[in-house]
Image (cartoon, rainbow, N blue to C red; front, side):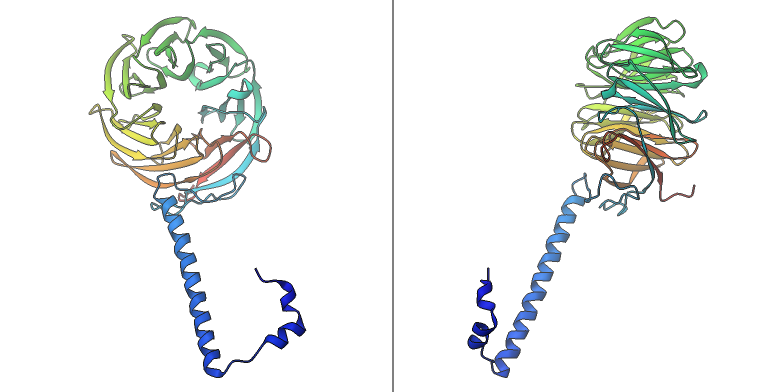
Length: 388
């Protein structure tokens, strides 16, 4: 530090002596060289920092979580997260956790579990407005719209129930036991049965979609993660915690007919299925991986790094694009290439962006966020690399 009193005119002039020409130009050259060296070192340090972030598998940049424009990221795959934010729409409820979503594209309704507020929000995707809330859903986790039945099913973990909601009146018309910690929900259309993941009970609870009565429970040997229906095989698939398996259930027999290992996938939880191409995608929440499973060959074929604590998956069938949302706020985006996936972007999107839904008709992507500028919002985005 320089003492400012030593820079006052009189003292400074008395001590200053002009150097001779040789000394002067030598000093200038040294100063310029030193300055260039400092700049180069600074640039090298910055590049090193960026490379470390990009190479970690959870690459991200310092992007404000309130940014309502495109959200970039540092990734070797594409250099940018191919999403452009259209709007943030305020949601009802408190600054608390949101969870699964279900989107009925034909009727333009998005159903959002607001777990921390014990309600399910109904959103009109065409008018971009909140239609209303279904309350008294204690710790609501999973939601599933079944338009052909005009019902929405919601798993209420706080009361260990599956609630049945009329999609016209938005009234709860029935409740059924859902086991101990009901979570994911799937509908086997041909068998007309609802399957509910029971995480703590280590089963899938089977409920008759007409009578709302429990048909049976199916032991899985580990905590049930997400449950999904494959429309081609007409079977139910469930991720199994602890076992790191994908279990296959025949709805006609209500029995597990196959258990398939997922090597390298710790904490198998999130699940999505591309029935057309016979692929299942599994989020491995404990080691930040995404497993690809071939439903025809009945084996895992690939595993990819994703953001820390991956949770909900959404698949755009028209674009063949998979979105992986994570508790860390990192979004990973993959495109199908035959039976394989290619990562086209990854980066920090917003805090708590762990749930995602996609509209098959418009290709818009929906991210409910629990706290943006002091309020919960629904962030609506579109692919920035596609013609819409």
